[in-house]
Structures are given as C-alpha cells and as structure tokens.
Image (cartoon, rainbow, N blue to C red):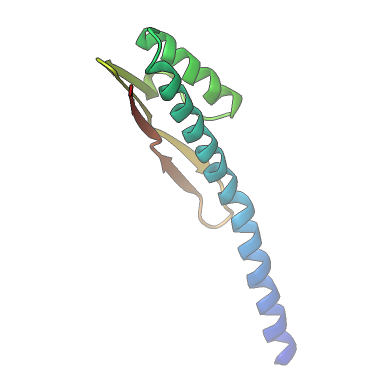
Length: 113
C-alpha cells in the first residue's frame, strides 16, 4: 500500500509538470506579444503612420511569435494623439484527457504627452 501511494504521488507530480510544460508557453508568448504591441503604440503615437501600416507591423510580430492571428484579429485605432491596439486570439492546447482553448486579448492604449 505504501508503494502504491508513493507511485500515485509521483504520477501526480509528473502530470502537473506535463500540464505546466504544455500550458505555460502560450502565456509566455502572449506576454511577449503584449510587450510588442505596447512598444508599437508608444512609437506610433509620435508618428504619422496610418492604421493599416501599424496593423501590418503588429501582424508581422505575431507571425514571428507563431501566434494564430490573421489581419482581421488585429485592431488599430488612431484618434488625435492616441493610438489603441488590440487583438483577440485563441491557442489550442492538446492535453491528453482535457484539450483546451486558451483565449487571449492583449490590448494597449498610448497617448502622446
């Protein structure tokens, strides 16, 4: 009985590490993408780039990070001195007993000083 409990405990720890190994990378990439769009909004609040060009830059960064985003998922608005960028996307994580979809909605708004 004692060996069975130890074996079960080890299986639980291994399963927890496996789930973390599969789930944490999409969150890490989402934080990188959030940082990229924040930087782009800061830069573009002081430039005269059109919204479509900003959208292409953000899409290029999303593709560098291998995110499942297309141009329709990225939204850019420029109103006066303010630039807002947001995107909605879903990452599928295929766990053996519980496949899941992680939904992300990174966004930022920057205003010129």
